[in-house]
Amino acid sequence: MSEHRPRIGVVTFPGSLDDRDALRAVALMGGDPVSVWHADRSLGGADAIVLPGGFSYGDYLRTGAIARFAPAMESVAAFAAAGGPVLGICNGFQILCEAGLLPGALIRNRGLAFVCRWITIRVDHGSGAFVRTGELLPVPIKHGEGRFVASEDELRRLEAAGQIAFRYCSPAGEASDDFNPNGSAANIAGVWNEAGNVLGLMPHPEHAIDPDLGPTGGQPILQWLLSVARARVPA
Amino acid sequence: MNFRVVVGVRLKEGLLDPQGKAVESALPSLGWDNVSHVRVGKEIELEIAAPDEAAARTQVTEMAERFLSNPVIETFEILQVAELVTLHGDDKPA
Image (cartoon, rainbow over all chains, first blue to last red):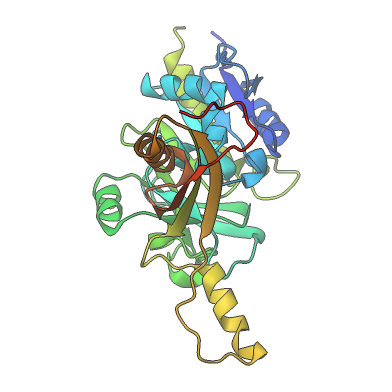
């Protein structure tokens, strides 16, 4: 039996930038990409959802604060509550935090500068066959408000619960402040929700898929999403 | 009744405020070298129709808790509530 191509919905908000790259990345990784419009409640029968990067609603008030109230986000919240896999990238991560689907918040980078470069992240707590604990992934970042913050108690809880997905690290895998591009607490680059079906990260896996264009550190993250989506579809 | 409300939103104490730091480090170059602990927040002004001031405050508080501020990183304060007097409006005097 040929492998099922799961439908992966990519939500476009006003101001989304990386939705097309995310759709292309999904297709390259073997998924069936479906565009989802922010004003629609329908997720187009998607088996997984990507909230892409960009500047939804011009980042007004706070990043992700207004996108959170989009009709599509109500459906995404219900989908996530039912165990559906959701990946939030950059602005998508910010939206998930604002929506309370992920812990913490993302604020202005330390040093105020917008950072745009290739970095390395280390999988702090993996999931499934693709996102493996300890693995190093070269991925690009491009954000002005990517400093992950949470209370001390919350950070301890996240650590204990294995919810810290990725940490910024040296090319050799050492997580340290020297390789922290934005001042994130505990060098955190991405987190899981408690149930492990919602993942948010500031780096851009969808830009690190195609070997013709550079490193492919984004592949395992998309593979995670596709594999969970496949597992949910009755064969 | 209509009220004009001003809500102040600030980053929580203890959270690094890079914007405040940037402002602080620019002040000495203008000759003010005795300033420290600069923090930048924001002020949200709005007008609200409500039966009375208490109702206006209650609603604005809820709006601030759920939307205007993010309790993970910010605190808010209602800085001002002023009744708007309409001189030529449709509101009939009570």
